[in-house]
Length: 483
Image (cartoon, rainbow, N blue to C red; front, side):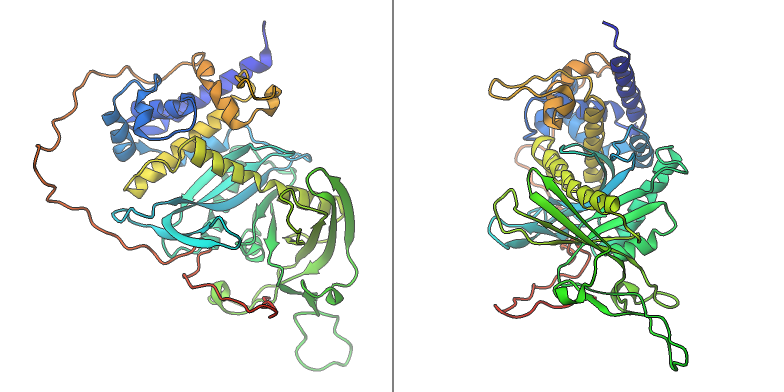
């Protein structure tokens, strides 16, 4: 039966695969077949060499390792290609981006350079560990509603000692410019919303991105102290006019005053969600840390503070209020509802990280060269993009114990099950493999006389700060106040 929508989706996937192949400038055939093996292998990826056994990979395991270690990917061209694909949008046709850092842990890779100490969570309560690895900053476009889908747009490996906020700001700036260049955002469209977690300085990022059509929404610590606008100067008053007004202490309700807006909504997972908003609040900046070298007077970065409170958590724990800072002012009830709902959608990127690591095998290869890790990372992003483009094409191959799911509700893992059938309907741009024989390798009994260089781990956290043992507060002491 003729289905124009299905044919259009298939044509979109075929065009992406052809252009993706053109982004592979060395060992292109082996790299492309490696990506197909990741897409078509049944079950999670357990080893890199195991992908050479997939029917979609027509070359040997030697060609596979040679492609990962010595291949070449035009990452700049691939970035533009990914940004040009169909993107999910919010209910008001707005593009919503989320940025976060996830580590590729390499604790025993002493011969791998450019490793950093990455922040990881332990299994116990309040258990945090610093494990050597390669941290990656990821930017993705979020969907609306309950879903595990995101659209990966960029990935940057953080160098040891890098300022994560500065790297993320430059990364978001480049992503937004690519979206404008590719026509994803045009003049008159709603401004792009960028959602960040508490590890980022949302006011600073909003100040650095003020030349772009973006709004910043970030979570703040519950011990922050913001300031109100400076009061009007009374006639006849001498001295320098004040720059800041009264304090707004997150932990002191007596300092909050009247709200700008109050909304309430019933949710399935959290019960009743109540949001309060206060307008025109800003942090008091000082010339230290990121603002130490700022030229000229320090800016006043005003925004809206939103306090979100829910009845209960899905895990059964005690819910705590969530404080959000939005880079716009004069918020309406609909603005407040949109902000906290899109912040909750930020956690969808965690599902993508889990898919990358547990199913697609992103962190499975034991690679030594960080450049090889970058190539493998972009191969995984290209495979995830193909899964997203094939959502409307696959047939659900559910297990006998799984419930039927509509086609538009399939998870990325279930779309991957049926991708092999979709691949058969597309054309492969790769050339036929040439017959070859593996080399003799090292003679038996000989020793490796050229040992690899050992590298120290950079003393850097996922927040960009130097590693320090966290302070232990005694029970009953007040938390520190940060401006």
